[in-house]
Length: 145
Image (cartoon, rainbow, N blue to C red):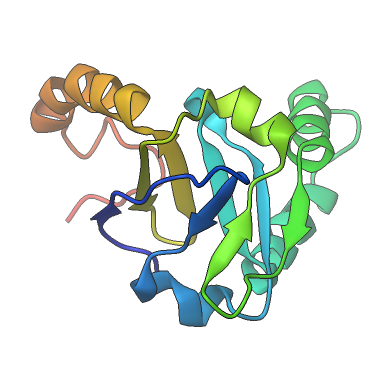
């Protein structure tokens, strides 16, 4: 499971040093793809297979399922970290997420997310008040206790 907030930097070759806590899970390969809110999703290869299997199970007649699959898969890049735990982020994904040198990598359970540091700060500021006011009915997929 991916947890926490980390603040690595992007090097001049477009590489990111993966947070040490994430390296073991991602050592066998990972998939980078467009995430929602203009971040980059980072899935282990194994977890991405599960995501893909769920998408394949969605009806092709459903426009939202087709659209989501197209965006997610067309932006995907499979990568293998080097011995130092570095992974290259393709230029198209760096542009999509507006990545500059300063990054934030967050754990989001079954995936990590890569954000431009300024974009993450702005997103967090916008969402924290709503987060504090959420109840169990506001979060889809959760069960009331």
